[in-house]
Image (tube, each protein chain N blue to C red):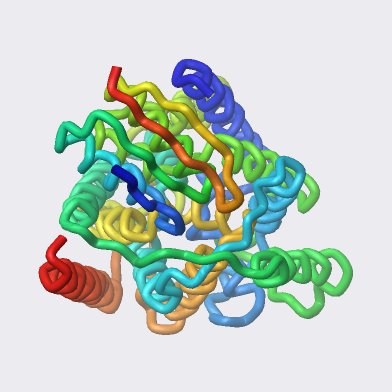
Length: 360
Length: 68
């Protein structure tokens, strides 16, 4: 594909994604939460009783749709390639902290863009943090950070995560009594299952085709001065902004925003941790979900890490509330920076030592 | 020069290619095994004014980069 065509395709995909996001809010999702990968994994973790925060429990069909949309389109386009074995445990740990950072801010990078498009200026502070985290992660990548190579895996290994979410869909549709459903709070606000699922499938397919990545867009600008991936992200913002303005869902300011708090420092640091971890993982939570659908079992580990991170966040009061961040959340965020940096520096040190021995 | 970027996750294939481009290497082969890497490396190479020819192989793709 030539660059112009790629940009055009990304612009169209971004526009449709932004529009679907606002439509899901109009159909019942919480404000500026047509999609929020972090919040939705958190809700799923609650639905299957991995945590017991009663206001954030719902088996979000959007996530199931994203995974299955990516799976279906990649199978159709013969791009379903089961791979894995590139530091799965490190990936689990990094994703765990990415989730904690996201829940300190109250949103993944995708929702950050949607919050910005809704006029939530707290998300602007978070964007600065996100960019700072990405730059820090990019420096480590330039210094030789790597999680190692992945290798071919069996189809069953690549498809297992999709199977798990297909099972969740089955339970949601046919034996919902097994799941928990919030009766108040953000978890109780949702579009009808069918629309959420279709929205997820559509965005999953689009994101798979266009290699959508919130972190990647900013990273490419910083590393190679390439704006191609960023185009998609900008179009999500523009489309959602226009839709919000038209439907009267735009509210500019810091105070009184839905599922958000106004603590500048922790909005910045929470999202910085997300950016930092995402760059080292090779993609934001959305991209990890899409890759997991394509059969990448390393990204499937990221999905599991995010689910675990979400459960811990609510079991140990690490997640912020509209009142602001918790002490535990602040400590966990700092710990996240420390742990990820230690992992990264160890890898770089070992790699450089090995290269020095081999003389290349 | 040959860069084996198989199994490396995004954006490492591009970083490895960039190192070779920065070292003013005019001709190189980059081996990749996933589509994101293929697209990212060829986009980067085109921006850097390299001619890119792509051959499909049993593991993925071989990209031949030649400075214009």
